[in-house]
Length: 354
Image 1 (cartoon, rainbow, N blue to C red):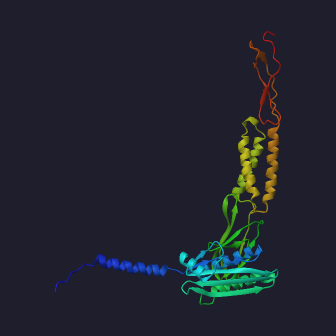
Image 2 (cartoon, rainbow, N blue to C red):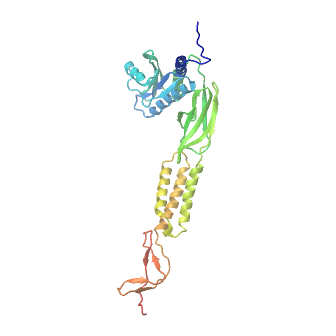
Image 3 (cartoon, one colour):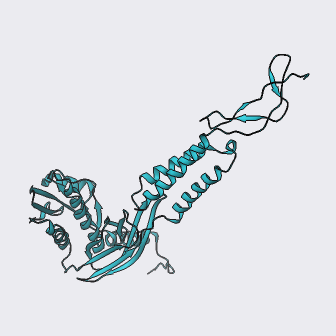
């Protein structure tokens, strides 16, 4: 019987089969359930409930990311239609395995009702739906934590451990954003309940030159305990201080210079840009002070530039045959008031023969 030897080689057909098997195995290993998290719908007329709804929804999404094993998609808008047919259409269109949604209601001035639900595309139905009713403002944030924990329980068969992230700003007051493992946890937070573990926590601001990282470090959140991050918002960053100092120095230098050499238009343009940036700044409580100081110095510069410029130099002129006068010696330029420029005026003409 004849036997063909491949000398250690694998035939192309066998290689194709092996690659196909490996490809399927890799896809299966990497595939994660896709979970869509929609902001809770505020069904009341209370605008303050919008922020609370966003906070709860964001916390659910962040903690699902921290839990791991899921591909979390954050939807931009609350779900207005939550019938099974509408949920199934949404899940099919987005290829979501689960959809998290819910509402916040205010039936009266004292009462707040949280509701969260979970749609399972495989089941074709809402598999979890729960509500919490509170009658005290002091219970709101504790209840919001319960809502988040209850929803996460639906995604894990094991006990989920939580702790507190305490955040402290020791610098100047200002607006800031808190990120955990690159996920936005919230704005201007002082504490938040999140999954226990060691997480990368980052505090960012949007400042004069764009994104500015105030602090970033890994923080350990113990089960039932608290992890702390301290940071200090600066009055001005190095770049901001350099920009403002350079502009103020330019004003000082200009007022000691010949006005004809001053680039007035550029200085005004620079001031408008700085004033706009400072007007919109909510990242440092010290900004209004710098704003007032620069405005005063700029106004002084404009007042100086608008005054007449007089160079005291006598001029000798003569009248030509055509009757026109022309200078024949040093001149006395005199600026018109408020012109910011220089006009020339000469002394009385003298006769050419005199």
